[in-house]
Length: 279
Image (tube, rainbow, N blue to C red; front, side):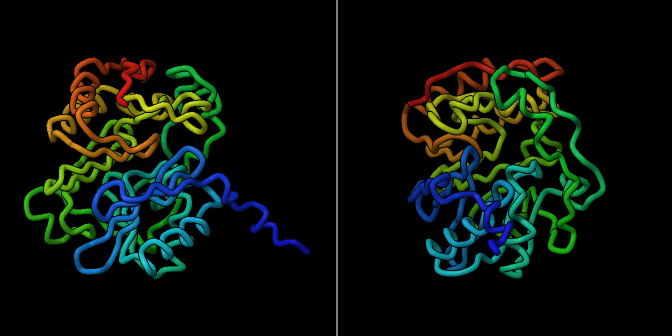
């Protein structure tokens, strides 16, 4: 009899590798969300986010193939279902810890679930389907460890050479990762390079544009705007988002400050920000 779990797995034709985004950084797009692997100088590697439900097997196969074995740890940018659904299976299989900002812990330890989505925020099919998305709670407490931030945190970082940048707004404990040696930025859902509310753009076309975070699940849009301004001030040269294609070069440097200036959202998260072509 066929294994029902095997039938539920995400198909391999729904994933797209993204090789050599920056030195030691590779990605895997799973339908409409990205996970990343970072090669560390000590020979280990770190997985950033863990993808959609039923995608853990594909993430594991990709990661072990690209980086030569299991990672030393998993880092979560935040706890939404499309970023954490493979976490328990992967941590179990690899026997590795999962790191997240302490403000995300209530949503990752089974204590709380995220607030209901703002249905229709920003328009688009993904927004109207938002009530169907899992909101948790999930319980990763067996593997969960706190991410250190601030001065001196680099010595304790599971991603050596990268700064953990708190970027709240989309969720309370959302983080981004920045490597100053080559100005590479992984932003999670702090902002996107595709329109996240549109299924066609988010999952199919992935037209390279700069947009704010997914409006329907952004808890504090005003705080999200401040986080976009903070990340813009880092002057990244290469950008790898949770939704959309990686971007680099002069156009990114030109358009990101425009997003930071023009992104605005009321307290319901209804405005997804400007539609800025970035490549």
